[in-house]
Image (tube, helix red, strand yellow):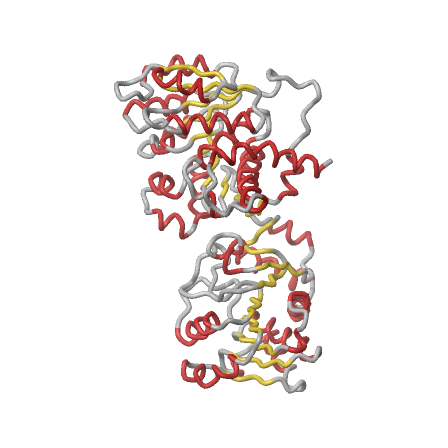
Length: 520
């Protein structure tokens, strides 16, 4: 599903009005009507309720005035609270504000905190709040009486409909601009905004409805939004039924490199996840002293013992053996449990430089190159990095907080600069490609906040690459199904947390089968 940032949406609106000739007032009318119908669907007995429309002076407020008009025509008791002087409302918003007067809809100006205090009782007696204060153009912190009004709305136990986007939410980043309305429902116009799907924006948006307002498809295609939301529909297109004559030699061979003293579990989970995702063969390369325990724990795969250091981590002298092992393989997954020694840094760099097959990197495999990112420039094959925010912070030499403040920007910039695929893990995992496309995942839940989940994801992505799926499709499918497997545990088994990464591995074939069965 296409997602827009504020600038892209503004371009579409302008093109529709100026080039295509649909007046802005018509777009506003369509927006207000669509939002009203959405509200009527969600609140069945709305005629018995009181509604307060809290509006700004811009087009978002104008949408709110249209909603007020349609509600009053359906017999709903409506009051409008305008957070500006009436004479400062202009353009299409003014046109719709003026239409309220003949309908005898009360419009009260709230220009200060004192004004708010005087009108709190009236708003308090409402059952539903329509938030039409700020639209998608907001990019600075909310201040003054606007801040006080939003805090007051959030303090009420009322149903809230946000117009286009919850006021105070950055449409591009999902970041709160100081304060933000917490909506139960959001009616957004034309296309969904990127900030609707990135936390905390996803949580503040509530139930989202996209309202068609009349923007032609050719204008959407012309602007060509750069962000996408990964939905099940795309996975159904990607996943293919396996040929009846398939065998282990035709479904690919994954090489997993990792493990160190006390961390062999990570590499085992990665290997199992690759196999569960459909890789025909999996070879797990670990320090020699760990090979027997790994062999025993993952009897469905093959194990290879590499030269090791005194601390039982892989030695730099493993280069030639790893190159030999890579022959005939379709993908390398490196990093899970691999450790952080100087030798490990050389091992990882050598793999990046020499590999002629895609390399999926995770955990300490990523940390190993954080001080030498130039090695990525000499890679012969696609490189896929799968950091969590802390690992991403090490790559960028910034704090995790800074990473989280604009996940899309950091992932996208890094991917393009270093010509890699970036999978920035977390709530609503972000995928950035080297050619500028950014995708946001729509599956997963808070129960995934436990060790080993990243190791499983690495194996899943590698498993799909191994089977011959295109790189972006493999990443998208791995990330989506990783979250879907967790969601199946969360909902079907009623386990909101406490389930393990190993539990998720066992769910992989089932969620793949579900997608394929629904497709056929």
